[in-house]
Length: 381
Ligand SMILES: Cc1cc2nc3c(=O)[nH]c(=O)nc-3n(C[C@H](O)[C@H](O)[C@H](O)COP(=O)(O)OP(=O)(O)OC[C@H]3O[C@@H](n4cnc5c(N)ncnc54)[C@H](O)[C@@H]3O)c2cc1C
Image (cartoon, rainbow, N blue to C red):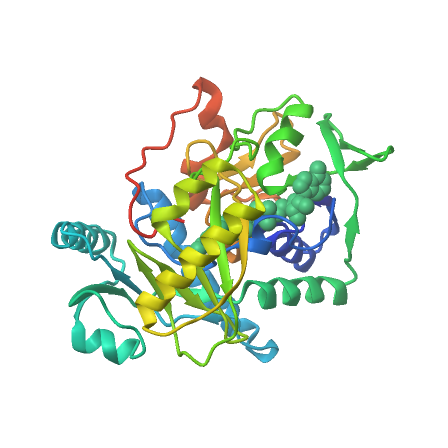
């Protein structure tokens, strides 16, 4: 099977690798290069935390397990998945109600959660000046060294003879016998099947191809599609795991720095990207870090980061065309889902049918888009 994967973000890379292992003749193209989109600027918290509806929770929980499996399978290549849990702390007066709701939901879904007290908080993260006496702990969650992971899969692909081909796809068209792929620089090539894994730009590729793939455009920024992601300087301050709260989200990075988000200023993405905004947000992040750790941690960079976000909030995975030659692989939470989806999609491309994907087919948009029902919860990524 001659298969083209469009996009070398985390989803395209892992899918191409699975396809290659399954014996496909794989080509992977990216208009810029490896990890040029959302994968380059992701918080990369691996979790199945408040993912609704239940079928989406199940998909994400299986995604967490797929990371565990892949880390074991490729352990000789290093460590990139740190399954050390996530602490969720709520400093608002609604905390008791919010905690109860989360515990009930996770328990119903069979996803482990513990209510923890101040002693346990200090045991888990001793350097944090905890603003609360109680929090929730999700032991199955973790964080991903997303660049280490992307580099590894890119290298494994290269070892198998597949390099990232830097080319931009304009459109795709399927016939009964092949898929014709037109490149922006000119030229048309034939493949048996094509996977569109171009993140936020998957929608425009589909549109130019006369297909429907509703992914939120990035040209009118706001907190649904964008985030302000800070990177601190490497620091001696110890942080082991993901901490999510109403005030600040932090997680460690492999070089001793941290990723930071400050939820109360996320709405400022609506102003659009500017140097002034990023400088101002950097200062706010430093103040929030000072409050959390009771010490100064400089923020070196703030990234105005766009997500690939299906219009109704959940994954769009499946064939877009009647001939079953053009397959969509677009999702938010792609860091959590990549190892799982890469495997499931590879199986579907040889005729398999994955029950876990049934609620996420592109055909659901035939009758229009039902917008995402959001409650702006703590930990929303
Ligand atoms: C700030 C932020 C925080 C996040 N936090 C989390 C989190 O905590 N946990 C989690 O699981 N997920 C998180 N995500 C989401 C996750 O990062 C994304 O879902 C994931 O990276 C998407 O990967 P992708 O491969 O689909 O797309 P991308 O990484 O965007 O890759 C798409 C690629 O396609 C290429 N491309 C585009 N158009 C074309 C074309 N016409 N021809 C050829 N190539 C093309 C681009 O150059 C790009 O390299 C976060 C995202 C952001 C932005």
